[in-house]
Image 1 (cartoon, rainbow, N blue to C red):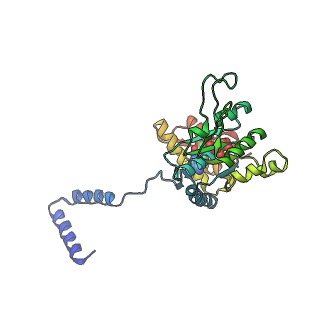
Image 2: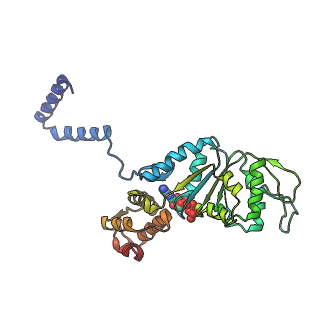
Length: 298
Ligand SMILES: Nc1ncnc2c1ncn2[C@@H]1O[C@H](COP(=O)(O)OP(=O)(O)OP(=O)(O)O)[C@@H](O)[C@H]1O
Ligand SMILES: [Mg+2]
């Protein structure tokens, strides 16, 4: 600050003192200073692409998403259950030129094998019992956008062959139809299985594997992300507190227990653990509110 401005400020302070208004001036000054330099928001957590985390392996994931998203090539997302595979698939879509077009997910493990083909490629009325009207199917509905095939390792071999044809030709044929239709979709697939080993055992088509896996994004288990349990815990607690409409904090001893647990169910398990603890806790979650496994670290 220049000498001249400092002298003006001193004069102002002296004047306020003389008039007995010093406290009022100081309060005003403090309020102004707070507006000029707001304190960092307490709830802020390091995140990118909608994923919370600041560990080296998550930064590697962010770098890959940043490169793969605009490239529009097929991506295979691999990782244990609850590591955030679906979030990554969405991030790839949201940061691609296809943003604004549909993002449609299909869980290959949840749909009975005999219905998967019609789910994905559609059917014409009367093509099988129960087909009471034409149906478009995921690929046609997602035209211009992204199809996310979750649990791809559970796709039956026969269906894998049909999917491969669609990827090669860029066209789908609805069940019971003899007409094909061109579609333009980007494919993102996810699995927690070892597809290479499945290829070796003849359970997954190698040619399909290479088509899906132009880029693989490997999501690390939560236990291999040092520091991220604390960030994620703060993120989820903020969200849960908002939902419950009451403040919620984590006691340092409880955080230490969370950081010591192995999290076989990864991020989903951590979120569930905190939701459960919030039910039992008043304002502060302590060790007593954690589930027995986490408390004992077994
Ligand atoms: N890094 C993260 N930051 C914030 N939330 C996350 C993160 N990773 C996962 N989640 C949350 O954890 C839950 C599980 O994530 P998601 O469904 O993407 O996992 P998944 O790998 O697809 O699991 P599954 O293999 O069981 O299908 C979701 O509620 C998701 O929002
Ligand atoms: Mg999933």
